[in-house]
Image (cartoon, rainbow, N blue to C red; front, side, top):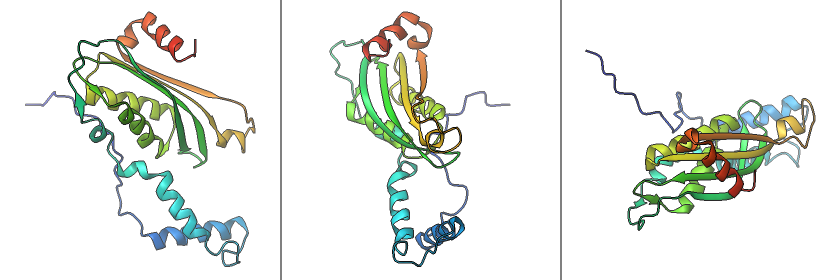
Length: 206
């Protein structure tokens, strides 16, 4: 007999090998400095491996956090409120998984509650968790919507991210002012174009 119950998507990235030590990570940075053509032992670079590893701990802290845990505390007393909850202008600071270059922008998040809501700071935290991982903008947009849908079971969610990618600005085609926009609509947002249009109008993108 087969189990046809769909598996819950895994939202938290799982490292498939033992995590390298801090010393191993710093040694890797020294190797990259030498590969770039400089001397990792000169005064200006001597402490760079330590600084880079500390920066990575901050930039990629999302791997140690669970978005569904963040969204687990909800409030059921909504006094009949059933319209959109929208957060605008959430800062996005992430890194492209292809070149490990930063991409910076803004996220807009909305959902249609059923019988519960979540603290608005938790939604910002979910954006931060996924941003603080190696990402593509498309994947991150879908992951944010998926986390909200799994945890809150809303009638629908809407996500937009507008960002500029340094891997395109400072290398490759060298076009610094190209903005990438991604959207993800679920539930009623996906099936109702008027609702999509209202969301875009309220966030100032229509």
